[in-house]
Length: 469
Image (cartoon, rainbow, N blue to C red):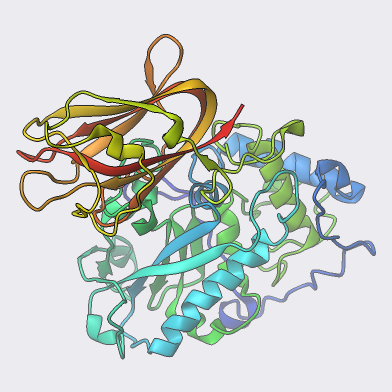
């Protein structure tokens, strides 16, 4: 069903689990309609051509008449997008809208459960049609809870948010807690996915992609690209199960897969197998679900600006990981808008890895006393395909600080252009700040820094990952 909540304008499903909430409703085994066929694991060259014929017409019908028509994958924030932006990782915040305490063991089990349910979907993408990832690394990076005392035996490294708002659903359903804990919007990918120049506080690794939203007295489940919402008792009762029906169903919506409540929402003639995406039809992911997921990926990956890290034809995978690409910075000629007379612009690419942002054991670059927008630039003697930068900021505790923000620009042959799909743009001290972006062919690269207040800016090392043409 289609609902709106605040600014989400999101399509929420409501799935009711048979054993927990459906009363007399019964399930049909998901294997009863399989026509003797089963999914074979994808190999390195598997494509849509390998889809079993008996699934083809229904999968294509749902894509054309439901997903395209309803725009369920139109936002560049599906779980496909989230995984690709995170280079094979997903970050969750658990939104604990419950009065029940949670032990340390249960919190650890929740993190493992999320990884298990997510990988039950993505394991079917391994080796399929340019999907570049293996096991997806799922991490709980924070807990949003109104009463932090509910987190028993809290560990020093656990991040807890205690800000709250009011749950609008409580006005319709008084049994739902009215107090709704929230994590910082500044760290939410859902709030900022549309802005390629947004800089997450602490860098992209500190963002959270989705909520696991756990609510007391909530019936069924909802989900989309913002996350999944389930009942607290249901979470506890299924925490260590292998496949969890409601949770997996709601994760399916995060990939853009749709519900099938009404007859007109289903393919003519019905489904050739059961599907977990039709509430109550299957308690696990089926062949039809797997090929609907794969079909969706095959359609979305055609937009190479949206998914730059995938296989394109015979070119092979475009790998933007720092372990595979070459740092071409040492080959560059360096220039800048301004350098302090006692600093050295060549420090940017001297190959020295700092131990902190105030490491003065080697030369450093700084532009004190200048403020506002300053730039540093690399010029190369040939064209490279550039896809990533790593910046270690200089911060001396006096007049030089990390920037307020910055942009990465490339020379398009006529003028400077901002790189597209920039993910990262971090300003953290004492570490490399990695930014990945849509690969560009260029002979020049520039960082434009905006200073923080009256402080100037500086850099200890600037690496550029690229493939030589």
